[in-house]
Length: 614
Image (tube, rainbow, N blue to C red; front, side, top):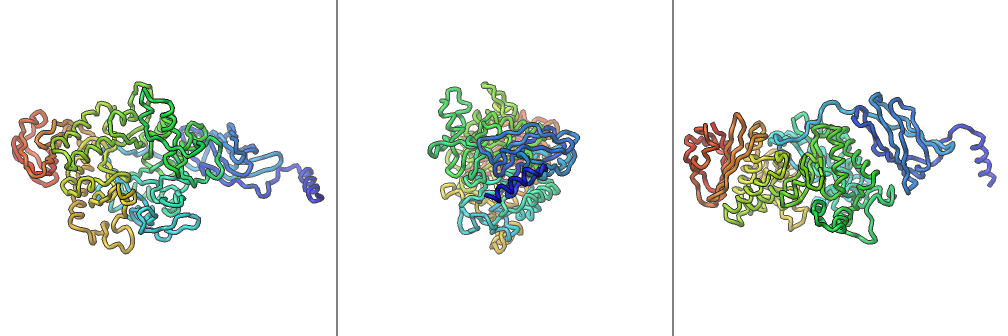
């Protein structure tokens, strides 16, 4: 008792602010910010014991504290600042006070990278890869203290050791392949107890998973990719977090996540947002239900959550000089918030690329989220691009051989005939498969011919093509065997691999042929403006043949797909006269064959021809 009285007297007698013994600010998010941003608003999430009872001030020139926000959790304080155009890079000294108690924090203010966003467009080909499964460039980070799941390469759902260094080490391979963009499945910290390799259960929005490397390692990867003309797309998730996110031990507020008396799963029906007859209870379950038991659903209707999420994307763009974002489960969160996010990002970084994952089989449902789409209910997504699942599913039906060839090809024709629903269909990302689907080669019965037909189509129709890692060597993967089997290790990415795609050692003749075919068609496409932005004209499929043209004022390319398994077909120029007018011959860029007479020539069964017309 005497000691306590003495301490009280000492504090009373000393007029200066005193540091609080044992009190710390555990973290501030974002961990840094930038000068030169068009929007000077910044909201800091400050976390520490009873920090909500403190006030905060700074005397840094050009930085003004506007307001503070407190929640029902006293361990959080949200600080709203304005960073004016006069602010220069440096260290902002934040002083937190409670009575005569003081806490100080040095906050980095960095320079925003100069130059406009490169973005992604229809001149690009995106290569989707899973960091854990592509290449292990730094085995020393396979085991990291504090991470709950250790590597087990024998387990399809375990961590295998791929990392950011492995991707950077093999950028030359990707450049030679002909890709101009890479999309990484999430690499942020995913400190879950199991199946953490896929990255879709974020446990820290501002930290690379140390088993992949550091934030600076990612920044280095982007820099090296840019040196080769390769753009980088980061996968993000705003709908949910991982159950082991650091928030879950001490939520910023009771309404930070959607909570129920017992586990409640989403109904996965994003169509309820656009359905004029949908029950409100169904809409509520779509937005607020959890995607899975280990994925707490974030409440984007909370303004603090909204601001936090928006700022994470702005921070990563400015920190790493990012080119694009792929937003997972785009249609699951609160739609108006996602629209505001997309607008904030593209206002701050004009031309920046965002593609939202919207998984439907109908173009009408996909187009609801499309760029500049004016929907009858007034909703506008502001989303630059959407994932074109209807085209993906149409390629499966066209080339898997389960229907007659003409009916299969009509799926492609009919899907594209609905492009009137999209204000700008060239923005759509098109693909044969991805990390959540049975691989195209497996889907089409391990047919090399179907692979060549599908790839030829995706690389010449409208849109932004994306291929999944391993497509170039016809890797297999069956969804029915579990997602881990869709995401096998890329051969050669690990020391001691018996087969190595990067060097060509040990790969089969089939893999070599597929790799050569992919390399040839991607590098041809790279410089073909007529394929990037040219108009599309197609003809109703007949006799198992689908013909379309990509053309502009100076060039025209004729694409012919013969899906018949055994029969050659004669192509009559008379049928396509309106597209062949003025052209007398052409060259098939796949085979090198010269077509001297465009009025009558043959195409072999299960063959695609891409003819540059002259």
